[in-house]
Structures are given as structure tokens and as C-alpha cells.
Image (tube, rainbow, N blue to C red; front, side, top):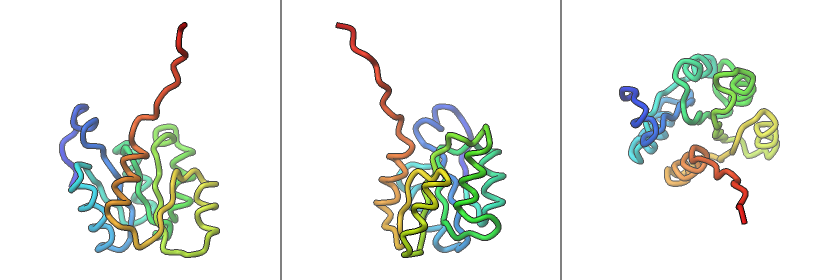
Length: 142
């Protein structure tokens, strides 16, 4: 699904790595993001996601917490431990209603957790928020 790389394309159409083991759900997320101008690449397990993240340097990793191989929490820990992926924002999605999972995810370095079912507009809004440049503090000179 990934379009050709170019710096201007990357700036105007951020790349999101979608990590989900259920093909229908993965496709739903990818289509929702693509419809809003994002480029997407897909992975069906945590091991595949880790390798793709290192190769592609995505602007965001969107991962289900319960994926095979290494789960989304361990995926995030490994992304944070790798120099090339350390600063990539991670948006996790979970179907677990146990409130322990968001705390564990945040402890591993996940930037935000959404709960399933997740509406497309909420997913897109959070992706944009996490990818958007953070304002830098510039002291005023009086």
C-alpha cells in the first residue's frame, strides 16, 4: 500500500505502520487513514512490525495491544530501545476493558491508548495529533 518515497510526500502524507492481526480490522484502519491522506504499511504481528518500523521509519505506529509474536506493549518497549525508532509516536488500541492495560502501555512508552471499537474519525484525529509537530518554546525578547 505504500506510495513512493519523497520528502515532500512524507511531510504532506505521513506514513502510519498499522499493526493488527485481524485482517478485516487492519484493513479498516488502513482505509480510514488512507482516506484522510495518510500513507499506510501493514504488519500482522509484532515481529513483522518491529522489522518494518526499522526499515521504513514511519511517522506513527498504530498497534493493537494483543498481536501475536511480541504484543503491542513489548513492541513499544523495543521501539523505544532502538535508536532509529525511539521517537516514533505509538498509538495503541485495545479490546480489553481492564484499565490495567493503558497504564502498562503508557509505562512501556505508548503515547496514547484507544479502546475498541474505535470510530474512524477518532483514530484519524489521534493519529494527526500524535504526528503533528510539537510547538517549541521560544523565549520572547523584550
